[in-house]
Image (cartoon, rainbow, N blue to C red; front, side, top):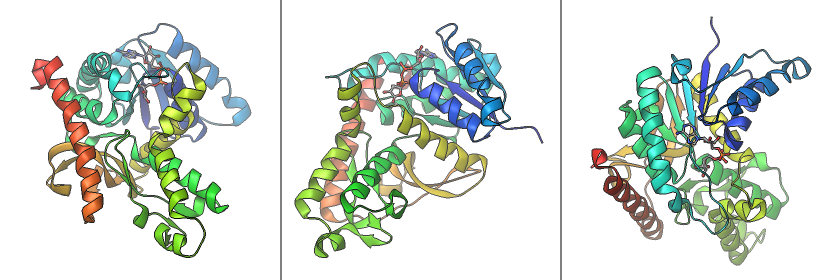
Length: 320
Ligand code: APR
C-alpha cells in the first residue's frame, strides 16, 4: 500500500516542525508548499538528510506549485503571518484572510478528499473562512487549538502537582484566544477532578485561577519571549496528534475547532469543542452540558469568534 501523503501549506516555523515530526513518526510522504521560493525545498532536503541517522522512511519535497499536493490525505495549513509582541491574534485577520482564500482554492482544486487542519490565526475565524473558500465537507475541515491549549494547561498543572504530564487530563472549550474556557471540573489528575484536588490541599483556588490565566495567555507568553514570532514546537506537535488520529482511524477524543450545527446550541459555527477524530474526519462532537458560569464564559468566547467571522464577511464579500 502506498504511503499516505501529507501536504503542509506554509513552510515556516510551524511548517518545518510539522515536516520533521511527520517524517520521524513515518506518518507518510511530505509535500511542503510555500510562496517563499527555496524555503520548502531547503527544509525538505535538510529533513530528508536526517533520515539515514534517524532511520525513517519518508520522501519529502518542497514546492511552489499547488499541483504537487494532488491527492493529499491530510493538509495542514500554517500559511500566513504570525504575531509579533504587542499584537493579538485578531490583528492578523485581514492579511491571513487573503491567504486563506488562495489556500482554500488550492486545496479545493488539488486535494478535495483531504482532511484539513488549519493552524493559521485568528484560528476560529480562519478555519471557517478556509472551509468556505475550499467548499470541502465540514467534517473534513477543522482547526488546531484545543489540543495545544489543553497541552499547555496540562503542562502547568503537572508542574504545580509535581506529577507526570501523562497523568494530567485537561478540558478546554471555546475560541483560541483570551476568551478560551478551561473547564476545571473536567480536568483531572488520573481521574481526580481539579476542584477535588483543591479540597485535598494539593493546590489552592488562587493558584488554580492563576494557572487558568497562564493557559489563556500561553501563546502571548511565548511571543513575548521569542520577540520574532510565535510558538511552533507545541503547535506542530498538537496538529500531528490530530493528523495521526485521522490517518490511523484512532477515534481519539480531542478538543479542536469544529463545525457545530446544533451542538452546544450553535447554528453553523466553528469553535473549540471536544470531538472524536477518526477516518471520517470529525466523526462526532461531544456535546456536554455546562453549568451556568461555564455557559456564560462559553457564550462570551463564541461572541468574540462571531465578531471575527463578521469582520471576515466585511472584508471579503464572497463570504457574506
Ligand atoms: N501561501 C503559502 N504560504 C504562504 C502564503 C501563501 N499565500 N503567505 C505566507 N506564506 C508562508 C510564509 O512564506 C511563511 O513561510 O507562510 C509561512 C508562515 O510561517 P511563519 O512566518 O514562520 O509562521 P509560523 O510561526 O509557522 O505560524 C504560522 O500559524 O500559529 C499560527 O499565528 C500563527 O498565523 C500564524 C501561522
